[in-house]
Length: 299
Ligand code: GLU
Image (cartoon, rainbow, N blue to C red):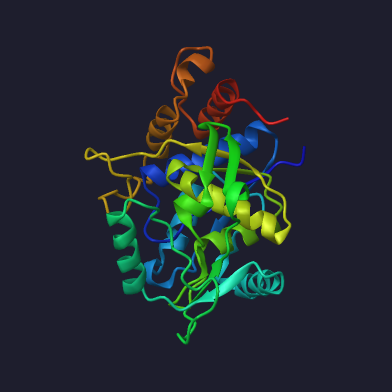
């Protein structure tokens, strides 16, 4: 099998314990399959991107011994491809312009909530803009049974989501002229020939949308594995906003051991000696063996 995996950090701050877990899991899965591991910098969300954070993340990965097998891809260099994909979707009638403002959407969701009906975008602009200027582009999600997208997650098990009732027509090109994560990630993974996606479970909810988009664009659906996210004491996903601190680059082994523990990998047992690894090479050998034992590898 020609396994190709990736780690796709958003440069919103330095690598922290939470993002290290995703990086490590994707790295181990690629190694366990004898595959290729890539890094993609998701730097197109202008307002959230922190200057210097991408270089910092790449240097930390290097320092921690996770070297990408090909040069990193920067989303900011790939805008023309996102535009092409949108044009393809327009030509096929899968997308429509939306003129709703945030306030209008919030109001309709509030009404829906009061009526106890769907919280999905109600599709106000599906049949035309009614004189409003176009602000965003949305994907027309399928109706009826076709709206139900299912997949087998290699960690979380069987997943299904009804895109029509749980999500609604979702945005691909935002009103603030930014490309939506959902479109960029699908185009990039397809162009890079990614066969396996390993990432944090906070993105589980996005996967059905991405599979739907893959079908509309006629590209293959990779296998998915979502690892549990690291939370703080309040149970919130660790991020810069919830107080995650940068990793201590002086102690890569300690941070990696903690990340492996979070993934439920018992390195002492796998190494056979009952001892914790003392070098990065030993760590990666033991962690890859422990991962292969714990996770069912794809054939
Ligand atoms: N850039 C996303 C994040 O940092 C991850 C995207 C992905 O793995 O699909 O949350």
